[in-house]
Length: 390
Ligand code: PMP
Image (cartoon, rainbow, N blue to C red):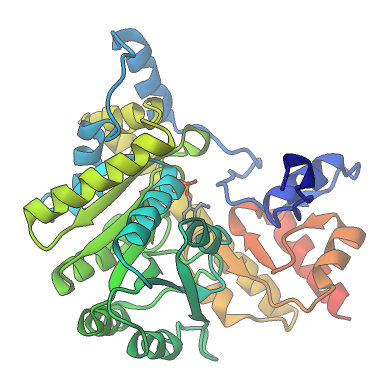
């Protein structure tokens, strides 16, 4: 095949929305698509703690000489201590966002297990399956869904664990499930961890929203729980949301091996995979995060900004759930969910109508970014949903 034989690709269901919104002339248009936090004015703000850290870095940084494929190791140490606590032993490396962490993990897993499969609960973040496929890993799915009361239903996941092969990789959203917002509770996580341990499967926790769910410590409880329950664990961590550094691409991959030597060995292989893919991760975002975490005052400022975001998201979620309830469109999953996303209960065609008639943009799946709501758009979206149902 020559390059000119390549066929056009379909549009990315989420990234293509921004382009469509930008072309739309209606001033009332609202973009509920891409998952970035927005404030009440609709802006994705830069944290004041980040601005302060950047000013300090611009003043004090003396070199931009190469680091290594491990990235900024002080960042990894500070971030894993802040995220998981000093007591949890993890080896790790800096990655190009959470995506880079998942990519390295899947490529090393593909190299170490013949016939290993990646098991995904669907719906899931649309990039999980393509990353697994790009590593040559097979994929199995189960339904990630809520029960009638809107709580996570663990039955399909437990069934998938019961029927997996040893070495299969379970990608688990550590908190704030994207796109449903519905997470297992702690007792359910305990059952899931025990079942995974018994099956000899490997958990890969994707933690992209720590601090946006129930709280900073609560949002990583699943990591501590799995750390105790299984001999080997991988955590793909993103700092892009909880530090607002999206385009700076900051993340890490942390590893618990069977013992300290094995953990370091796994990291060596991950670093070798990084070396062939991009050599080294970009430094700026990691040095910003480390500067904040190593300074008590900047840390306090950052945490207070993150806490305010979490509180705003939770109150938007409840206000929107009430607005739907008031119109007879109540959805328990929305009010019981956590984090930036929820799924609107939409029929095929509803989303296109929302866009055509009301300038409301979201992906066809019905996933909405709740941070894009404001007092005014809560009512508008609820009214529009009622109208398209009529
Ligand atoms: N995992 C999930 C569940 C996500 O929602 C995202 C980002 N949308 C990522 C991973 C990737 O994060 P990053 O932007 O840091 O690569």
